[in-house]
Image (cartoon, rainbow, N blue to C red; front, side):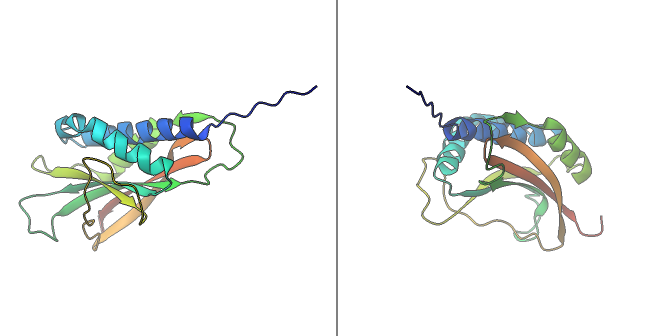
Length: 173
């Protein structure tokens, strides 16, 4: 007689990666000198959306846009951080769950400081057909014209799920 055990680690990976993404965003907000209060008050909405779209595989990236509300719309972006989702990160994964806060710390230091009057928003870039999640609405990302994207590496991993981190800086800076 033989016994077989099958464990679905994807559900655990989704929970770990969604929590890791939101914690990493909070780390970026705090270390960039921005006010994390609004993000903390919306924590459950963020978790629900990210977890739902990771589960359904509709989440492409989670984006933190930092903008200057005193500048004209279209020219107000001052910085951006992208967590790009990789659903095939480690296909033969053994269920290992990890988070690299040093990668996040490095990207914040490289991106530089932001004026204290800046604000931010978190945008989920999703594939069409995604399920609706309460508290989330549709929007467009601000233009990154005049910015350079810098890939940092994978910041969060869980099983076959990974999230790579990139930051944007003004071209020439």
